[in-house]
Length: 49
Picture 1 (cartoon, rainbow, N blue to C red):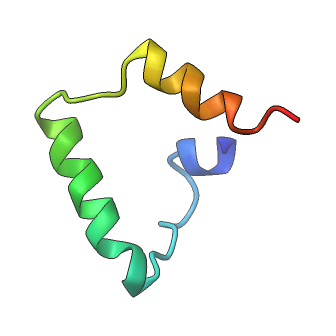
Picture 2: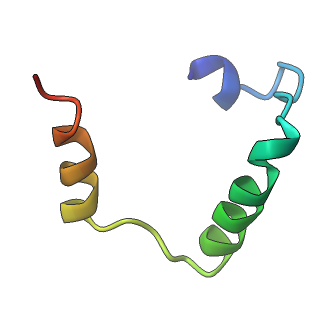
């Protein structure tokens, strides 16, 4: 994660199949549409055993 956040690394390759999702996410971020705390907590709960 830190490698992606740093500005000295090369851009990460995006698989063509992931490009629509990446573009949608960028558009949502530009509109300042982010997940709520409740949505984030629900996503993390999916990983609980």
